[in-house]
Image 1 (cartoon, one colour):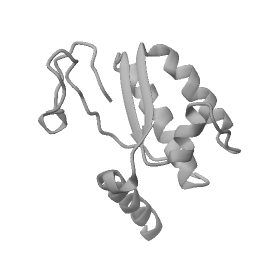
Image 2 (cartoon, one colour; image 1 turned 180 degrees about the horizontal axis):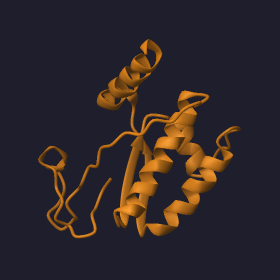
Image 3 (cartoon, helix red, strand yellow; image 1 turned 90 degrees about the vertical axis):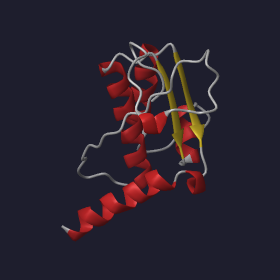
Image 4 (cartoon, helix red, strand yellow; image 1 turned 135 degrees about the vertical axis):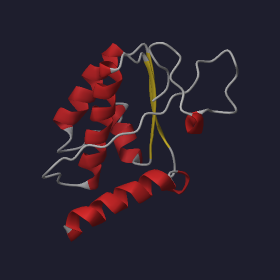
Length: 130
């Protein structure tokens, strides 16, 4: 997530060294949530986006940048595609963006998103080994 209500919360490992000093300090928030009966990885990613927006609203963020490796989900969020099974989640995502003054959802190649991919694979592995 990018931005914060007071501009003071700044984990050291999330500072963007290329950010001009006039921009707000980038802030990353980490968390996890367990969802049962998720039908596909795409639905899981949609639920994660929705949860990120809920958390942004809960913590008073007014600016958000989400970068996902699921290009089809980005296209659906940005209104270019529709995905059966994600309709309600996408409606929630659209509704939650009205709480933000600035937001963007963009694609990042999986090769540039290895930490998130590793975490997701580990969670799936833990789920199926339990």
